[in-house]
Image 1 (spheres, rainbow, N blue to C red):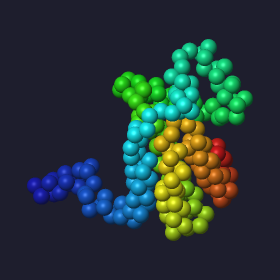
Image 2 (cartoon, rainbow, N blue to C red):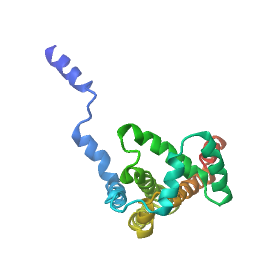
Image 3 (cartoon, helix red, strand yellow):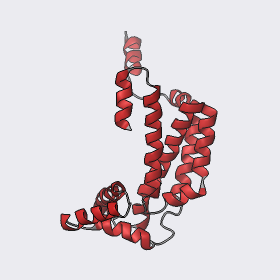
Length: 193
């Protein structure tokens, strides 16, 4: 009786053994390595360069207080062909960083672009894998992770990296909607698009 109670308490323990975690991660190891490389390249020396003029313009909009400044600036951005969604995201990002004293830290502010750069690599991986298989997906994700232009734009306080991220994920949702066999999943993927 004592053995069965002991065995029952061990089997109901919520911790997953290390062996099963490694067996779950092993098949996805190439994907995880590519994502780690992408993150390392995008976050490495993020605050090395000081904010330059175009980044300062983005930052000025993000830290502006009050509706009197925000709406006219947003409409001016649209007139000048700048997507206002990024500037709104930057404003939210700045708001989230402020309680930690990081609202004006160059690296912390640029981390939004770096996070979106890593999400771009994940999106390319999923998109290329969906279209052409795992090997193509891994190669496409690796090339995206190592692309000097994409790494550079991931480290800037500008809208170029977020625009790339949104385009990649829109393409992924489009492919998923196109390939969905029934109406409900197709509608859900279209909503994601």
